[in-house]
Image (cartoon, rainbow, N blue to C red; front, side, top):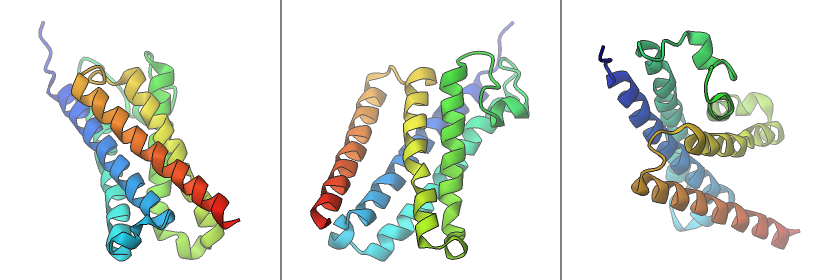
Amino acid sequence: MTTDKHFWYLSRASGVIAYALFWLAIVFGLLLSTRLCRYFNAAKVFALHQYLSLLAVGFATFHAVILLADNYMNLNIWQVLLPLGFQTDRIGVALGQLGFWFLFISAFSFYLKKHLGQSAWRWLHFLTFLAYMGISIHVFMVGSDSRLLALLLFYAASQTVVFVLIAYRLYALRQVS
């Protein structure tokens, strides 16, 4: 019996797109927090940061939810939403799921900022780094396309850019204190 793999392919493609959008959102956020955006229009950088975060949540949601229609995997909503619900690749999938929830919280924290206050919001927004780490590990542990050379190069380059920007941010903080 042959199975329809369209849902699986849609999930894979939307996962790669979600990762790329999330990476761009992090880059723009780090540009803002390192003050490197002074070379750009800060309001536009912030708008892109916020928009890309929400778009990444949308594609990541599609990435997971479309698997409910895949008859081969035969998943239920709880396996898709809750970490450790999968029967295979439990740790890799769970890190992706936790990363998604941290991304979700961080992306929608924009709308809670005035109620939380700047300090609490900033701490909550640090979940972004945990999200990126979890999702990056998910990509390598579970991602069926992560062995393709083009994607390996993209993941390596994107993670290097994030690492360099975080290192610069930490260096700049040391210079201020």
